[in-house]
Length: 583
Image (cartoon, rainbow, N blue to C red; front, side):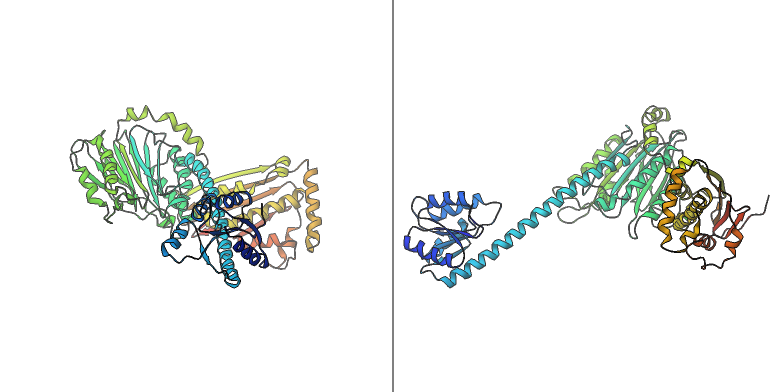
């Protein structure tokens, strides 16, 4: 292999080759020489020089053919070819460029002009190499991104499609614009034998639009499996999405609960196009009006969960679609629109043929034009209770297992509960109870926006009970910054040596739509301490030690220690909560 700045001179005339070789060597190039086209091509294949100077007319193989073959050999990289010629014929010069030439050097050869042309070709070569590296890097990144998206999609599909979409009375089309679908279709049956279907359309497309579908699906399937009804579910979904989605991102959705024993359908539609309930007996259609704002826009207390209730009969068919159907545009820019869709329902098609007719009409309208949005269509056929009960139980247990952990958190009216959580030595050594306790508290809607303060309360209470109460560490070690390292060294050793002791949490909650009261009690097995002296310190004057107690006093509305100091109780109040009279 020749050096990086080597040049191949393919020229029949010995004097011309000598002159060019001398000029090139003076410019610092290594030189390879050939006096015919066949030898030039063989020399190029063996040495792969960085630049080729090629005469047009040569024996055995002319310069045009040599240039074409070199281009075939270098399809993946740029090798400049400079044609040597004294001709001024435009057709010949054009043929040289068509064969793969990049420039010309005319006889008699001039050293200054040769150097300028070589510098220009070198810059072109370096630019091409840079573009090739960038192309390869982009290709690698794109391949990596596609692999990540495919992996994420497999996980997403396992969560989002765990439900009842394979039931014989459900037909659907989900045609994503990208790898991920911004539309999401969920269906599941509850323990009472009801069927709940949700079609959602997140703002945007692809992964960014589908990111909210994971918590949406998990919450949906979990709540359906536990017996919650459509009003409870959409209310909870709104809370979840409002908390996690960035401003400007929301989910237009329609949720329908079918009660096959009562022959009713309860419909909540927030931002999705009006659906239709098709009466198979009469051919009449009832609109499923979009009456509400989409999910994730309004906070929980402003959310409207009212539903429209329709009587149904077996054979009736309910249709939902995303706006991608109505806004599908053909080559001329015309949209499919609602009227074309309604015409299909009035076109005399048999009830069982409507779904295929709708799908076919949209596809025919688009023709070869690429879709500009996710296209989703779902049909649910109303069936008799006994017919539905025969197919639903097969996958209900799978749904419940795959979605365990969700639940309703936005109940109306007063709620009260109590919880005691106690940790023994093995748990104290190997478990951090704070995430579990915080998760329980986050099931209270009014506490979700206060997670930071609640974690601080729990963390300070737990560390004080464990470190000072159970382990008996002296907080005076933390009077200086240098003492922290020694303090935590002792803490680790004391935990390893711990054989007896416990910490117990007592949580009590009372709340309603306006606010609530959370009582937190923490008891440790230690001997207690002089808490009156600590509480006598003014806030903010505790140095390194005692800062946690000061923080607890600032965050909570009330805090007290119980003699001998190994039990602390505090109250955390939010909203417009007023203490109820003792009973």
